[in-house]
Image 1 (cartoon, rainbow, N blue to C red):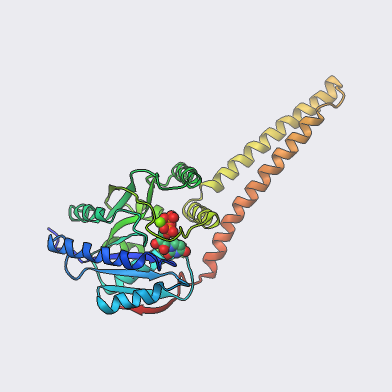
Image 2: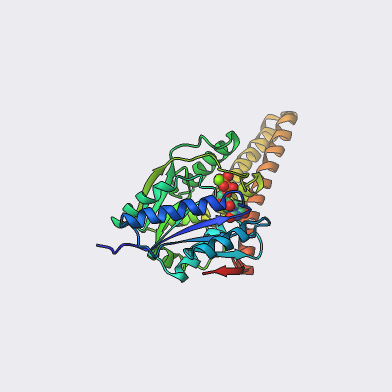
Length: 318
Ligand code: UDP
Ligand code: MG
């Protein structure tokens, strides 16, 4: 039987001055409730990562820390993106010490009451508990479609990410320790934790509308997340390019043979101008697409080789 665990709640924040105060209050009272039920230790705490906010987020966090030292935080020198913020959170709470950690968005769109179920799953032996949203009612139409496409592609590529899993999950200390063994700079956490091979459970939760402020993701940042998710995770698209290239070459060879036979034996006059144009457009398109795809991987290699730090801390409140 496990001891009552020390829980760390990781909250990435980017320009969340409108949400952060009430979020922290709600989560602190959740910690109180769970501690009263003896589900978590009363040494449990919140760990906020200010991802280079340009508004009042950090000074609000400083004030919250003054009134309650269970509010711990780190500030980045600039914006590094939500994945890096969660990563920094996991590494930060590993340093401070905890038995398990839950990451949740600062706007509390994910139902925080599901954390109790996360803990139950953890106590019955899971090292990773992934939150799965019941639906995408709160998402705009375009995001719904692109997200579904992304999860479809990832599943075709062999990633066992359940659709509608966001970064709302519990990981045990052991899972964080394993994560530290992976030196790569660009870790796509959703794919990573679902692949580790540690015992995984799923908890369903409801999504609420954003409490205040606007979504911090735009089309470009979602595209970047999706592309780096795919290219940092899988090399299957590269193999696809090789196979495609092979069949294209085979097709070209057969068409070539056919043309020669027609020329020598049938003396046909050249027609098929349209065919030629169409084929050259299609092949041109496919070549450019494949080149771009390979370029994405070269880019990933480039970024990894440069081996830049994942994030740089500015200040810390412990
Ligand atoms: N976030 C972050 N860095 C960024 C963008 C977002 O730390 O560059 C945080 C943000 O503060 C929030 C979480 O990531 O806590 C999810 O962002 P948001 O709610 O805007 O995304 P959505 O729910 O619209 O997908
Ligand atoms: Mg949100």
